[in-house]
Length: 187
Image (cartoon, rainbow, N blue to C red; front, top):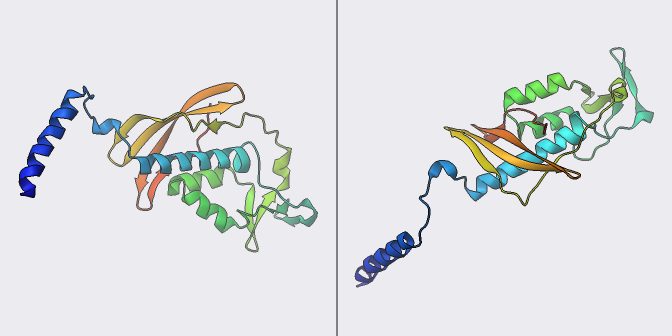
């Protein structure tokens, strides 16, 4: 009896949906809400690392407890979230591919592990860090710019003051989930 009711209902539903003038569904133009949320979190974390940790700023340090090592002066990092080199690597590996993590740590080598703690090379603070701290505009949906097996290229909109820009981010599926391929910056 129930089967007799279900089949006509399904036919009616199909007719209603086809009559609504809905655009044809293209699976290449679709990213599920879960992935969109994950990608957004990774983009926001990328901006944190770009703005506050590596390029436009650095983690807070206690210069009064600085030490000399290998001819350089290092100060311990006092950040509550990241205070060991292993923690820095772990957080990076949750956002970036293994190759990207290695590249980031090689290119931004002013953090060092000293006795299990994270230290910052004080000679680096003399570098003038100028630039705009771009923030993702969360009210603007990202667009798919490309999709291949295990890879998405997504375009996000960013704002800095009264300026706004679009930038593309590449997400690659790894054995640990989707990761960014590089420390990305808005140009």
